[in-house]
Structures are given as C-alpha cells and as structure tokens.
Amino acid sequence: MPASLTTTFTHRLLQGVAASLLVLALAGCSTTKDRMTTGSVPKLTKPVEEMDATELRSATDRLGQAYEKNPRDPVTGVNYANLLRMNGRDAQALAVMQQVAISNPADRNVLAAYGKAQAAAGQFQQALDTIGRAQTPDRPDWKLISAEGAILDQMGRASDARQRYRDALDIQPNEPSILSNLGMSYVLTGDLRTAETYLRSAAGQPTADSRVRQNLALVVGLQGRFPEAEQIARRELSPQQADANVAYLRGMLSQQNSWQKLAAKDKTPGAADGSNTN
Image (cartoon, rainbow, N blue to C red; front, top):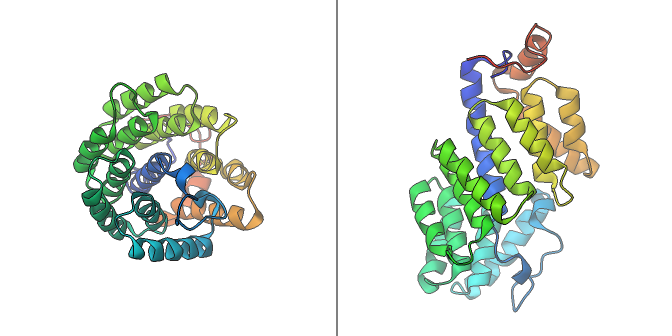
C-alpha cells in the first residue's frame, strides 16, 4: 500500500470500495436493457446510470406501479429490481426478484437478475449458485462471468475472481467494465499501481462509461493525487453530475479526516510515487 495510508483507514476505505466494485460489476450484467421499452413497461428517458436521484425515484415509482399490476411479468420485475438497487433498496429488490423467479424459474434473464439481487443483499454463495444456473456452457455470457468475479472478490477470493475476469476478457477482449473490475480487484488487495494500470486501460476504451472513470478517479485519489482525481471525476459530465461525483469521491476519502492526512503525507518521501510497503 502507499505509505500515506494507515492500516486501519485502508481496511475501512476498501470496504467501501468493495461495495463500489460490486455495483459496477452487477450493473454491467443487465440482460433486459434492449427490452426496457417493450410491451406495457414504462419507457425510460435515459440510461439509469445517467439519472440523478429525482429521476431515479420517478422511474422507480412508475416501474413499481407496473409491477403491482403484473408481478409475474419478467421484464417489469427485473427492471423494477434494477431500479430499486440503484436507489439502495436492496432488500426490496431481493423480495421482488424472489417473486419473479418463482413465476419464471427457467428464465435466464430472471435468474441473472435474481443473482444480482442476492449479491447486493450480501448472499454471495447463493448469488454464485443462481448466476451459475443462468449461465449456458455452450454460449457463456461474459457479463455473468464478470459478475461472478465481483462476487468472488466480495468473498475475499481474489485469485479466483481475477481468473473469472480473465475468462470474461477471453470472450470480450478489452471490455472496459471487465478491465475496471479487474483493476478494482487489485484495489481490494492494496496494489494500487496495478489497479491504476488496468483502470487507465479501461477508461481509454471507446465504450468506457462514467462509472469506469469514477473508479479510476478513486484509485488516483487513494494515491494522494487529488487534483488529478477531481479532473478525472469531472470529465465528460454535466456540472451537476460532476459536483455529485466529486462530493462522493471526497466522501470516500474523508473518513477519519483522511483527505487532509493523505494530502499532508503525500509530501513525505516515498508517498508521492505510490511506493508499496508490506
């Protein structure tokens, strides 16, 4: 770890990073995006990742009303659960997916979403089992493989997780969400230099989204390079979104006044270059 991080702070901060890692990996596992506007499912005006808090609540309310009318519909149920998780309502999302899975026990999309809901609720082994049932060996889904990696990282099985990410990259080379997850896996074990290498590669891909860049900003900030981290966090976003992301970044780094501590210690020998210590 960089010399500017104390052991206690690192442990607490990386717990938050772990949650961020899982959100990114499982958000990229959605299998109903192209079905979001079909049938009677309410249309969304923009991707959920680009919505602010008010827009998320409004979309969640509309999907919730559709779910109440037909709780067995797999598309409505999956999309409603996705929005619930985006609003931090993990327990409710899991309850929704339990009901949808009962009505659609062989639907691959439903099983994948059910596994995501289980993982978000901390039921990691159950999530692995469910996502495994959603997978088809003859035509494996790289998104599900990457999601398995994220869950394994949450379980502390870094070596197994990284192998799953590499398996996913064999199917989908240079996919930014996989590269980002692989980079965040190294954050969880304290290797920030390797993490930054993967995250820079991820952010440099043409299809990289803002979530990938926010993870890169976080890793740069963890190494004490705060102006650079803020610059990355503000890139290609509206002023409102940028302010929100910078506030989140600072919040992640502010435990125990860590922002100020790291900024001060970054001036000490060995800290600015992100040198590792054991």
